[in-house]
Picture (cartoon, rainbow, N blue to C red):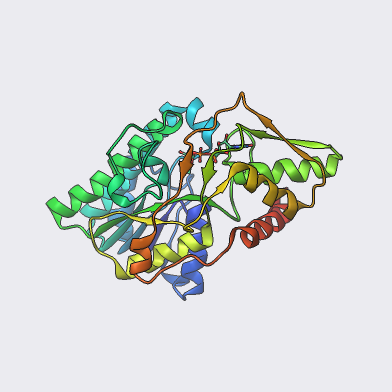
Length: 306
Ligand code: GFB
């Protein structure tokens, strides 16, 4: 077995590598940095797969970002994701890889999908405009997985993670997702002695958060046990409002000031909670509760922010 984790320096890829290493697969990993292998370069990706012939592929490489980055740079999000996933899925097929796991995202479901969102809600309604370019690229990836299964008999599967967080996340305020942004804002505010922290939007949107180590565990579980065209939701099973999330982060950081809301910033989709009953039926469930995961991620940030 030779395992290629594409995007191994990112939030998801690094968690998958940690999970595989702890399961004793460390010596079977083949990893490349972006400088060593540009995954948007189809020729380079073909050459890499022909030379290394990985048997198992975790496609965790993607251009990702929070609501502001997605709405400011939609061209980069659609271009890079289409190129990365097309290059990797096609090269894996041509070089005879035994199994590939592709990662979608909960934001590819319709903006107003019934909650909790079932897998069959895909392509049943209009998308959330703040991330439609990213979503359409990811939907193309899901369809590509389905098409390569049908036409080529490729053992390719897709998983749909909810909003993720954890060690190795992006804490840059302009491009990050809400959870790392709030950790940074509360830590900075506490250290500066500020009396309030500004939270984007109204605080009313609801999101579900999954620790990335739970996602990595689910990915390895599916690689071993699942081989079907249906993409599977992976989530925690409960959501919180952005206000509740901010209070959780505030308490984990130990900031004593107030929350203020900047309603000039977009709320995005009003609610995003995945129906995880299919994963539950398969015997998998997440285990890291939000309070524990946030506390651990605050500690990680304080130790690694330099
Ligand atoms: O995490 P986030 O950027 O992305 O924002 P989405 C979630 C909610 O948190 C929005 C609010 O309502 C934001 O307005 N929020 C509050 C903040 N304060 C902040 C802050 O300081 N920074 C950020 N970033 N948000 C993303 C998609 O949507 O979901 C991506 O754009 C991706 O495509 C990801 O799929 C999972 O949950 O709205």
